[in-house]
Image (cartoon, rainbow, N blue to C red; front, side, top):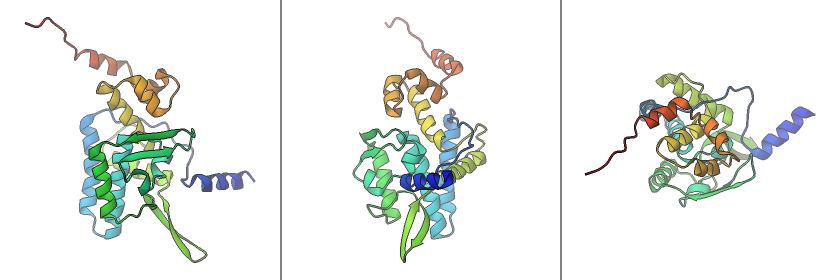
Length: 225
């Protein structure tokens, strides 16, 4: 009975979840982050079939949107073309039931539009397609599952030498880490994450004492002539 209830819940959420994963961490090194993204692009460039090219393109866009929107994995994977096509993001978070509504960066929006055009995606298609299914003679495509997303991101992280535990949530955490590192307001980031306390947000993005000390060492204030 419990298993049946879980299956029903999964169908309602549309995106599968899985348990037993260790806590994931952000990428803190900018060069390593660039290697992570370039490796995904290289796979797209070297793809030998249309299917593999789409999958590589999809995987790159998952990372790109994950790093730039700070969505939870389930919210990222449930996106449809119509949710992002106009340059606005307007979704209801699966975990909290809270709304996310904001304008996308123009460069990111262009990347999304190019991806949609390259892959001939319709408005109600999932942005990140997974397996094709057929029921009662009707074919349909499900979104990529969170479990498969984790495997894809983890494999890519391993290939470029990321030694920390990496998964789908690492995309969201990396956004927050670099937001703080680049001078962003922790209260604003807290609101983006829908956290209740700034301390929760700082722990979430793994902003630690050594990060604070590195930032302090860059400060120099003196009289100007």
